[in-house]
Image (tube, rainbow, N blue to C red; front, side, top):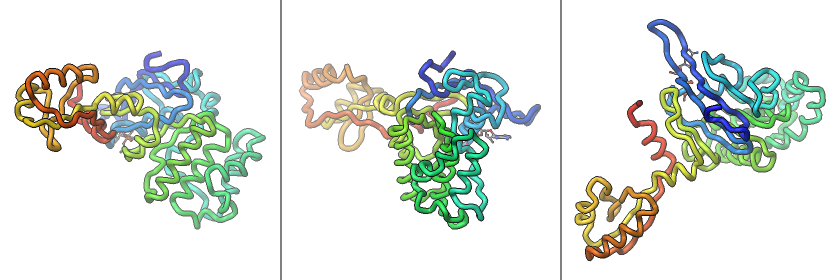
Length: 304
Ligand SMILES: Nc1ncnc2c1ncn2[C@@H]1O[C@H](COP(=O)(O)OP(=O)(O)OP(=O)(O)O)[C@@H](O)[C@H]1O
């Protein structure tokens, strides 16, 4: 299957989705394929309207794709295979007069029979054990998000899908959510697929990312590889102008030196060549961009 692998917890192939019809038709997803490997935290990035929520809704079975396939741990997506997924897709709606424990018990009743026993551990797992018997009306947004994740965990999923889990949270709430997500993956072995606008959050918590643009995959890979791929070689030299002239088209001035766009294996030869030309090099280092620069360069490229 294109973009998928037998290790994938979630794989989508050739997904197309058009909303509306006739002159008002809008293609939200345009042949999208990607695979979320088991055990990883996978971030879905993209500008507004890129199709992230549509993709998550299709995976969750809330929206039907026009074309393409979804598989969950190797099985075609169905009511049965989606039982292995926990989901927090839309902003969670709670009954203000019920407690956190009552919400989880209610969700447990609609799942398999033994899940009631999981309510207590889940309350602790998402860090609201101390507030288990408080009415949700008194909960902060961060606590509600945690309860929402708790509801998704009650049925003991192998993977969890979260649409903008840090949306609306304050910096402390974001920090707590980040550590909860990391623990779910590292300690409990749950695969996490999340969408987010917070690029530095994604950079910190995700192993892999996909960047969507206009319903297509603009870039995909390990966060470290995406950053390495756009690293530049920075040189502090005695005559930057000369270096810029010699490397015309491959170098830019900046930060008191010269940034050169070359592959790692070309660095020794470049240094040799500059030394042979009597250019004195005071410092040379690889400078990695942050995920925001990669995101901007991938999403600003003209659509093919
Ligand atoms: N139910 C719908 N009916 C019509 N158009 C829709 C519907 N849902 C989404 N769209 C359109 O499809 C496109 C993709 O929307 P989607 O919500 O998937 O993007 P997104 O990447 O999640 O954006 P955001 O970051 O703003 O949430 C947008 O142009 C949106 O307006």
